[in-house]
Image (cartoon, rainbow, N blue to C red; front, side):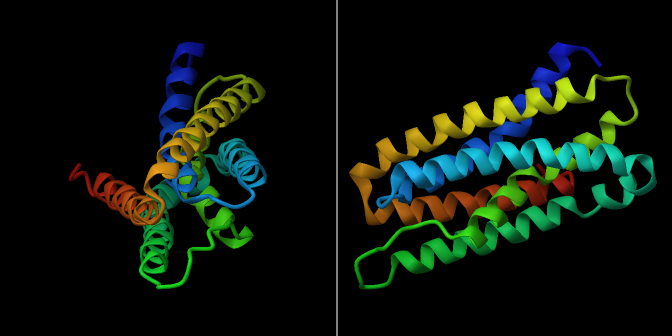
Length: 184
């Protein structure tokens, strides 16, 4: 596997983190810098951690994991998305923050495919450190851009942004599930 292929894989893996970063950027009002740093750091960290775990799992559990990883991502994203939409309909002023539980769920959901990539990398001669760093740096850049895009758009939409963000998370979850069943 050459460096161009690794870069393309890194970009592909970063797309979910990018989309979810936009969604979270849409809804963040309080402690924006702190929360955006946490999102970007967590997404890039998990994008590096998961392929490492996958690499070491290797071929022993590879087929088993790949058979249900999309379902886990679908469930996590759908639960978070439904919660975001539900919160937007409460009459009280929206107190949008970022809980550690939500951040971990989003980080896992956006990086679970990276574990499958790590399993795949175990079948090739590849510089593992370079591959993991490339995946992490790419996720960092895409997440940072996504959070900033979301913040810019979110300023103009306030409450609607939470509905849009939650709906997009649900749609990403559905897309992942449909890909799993080769429908999309």
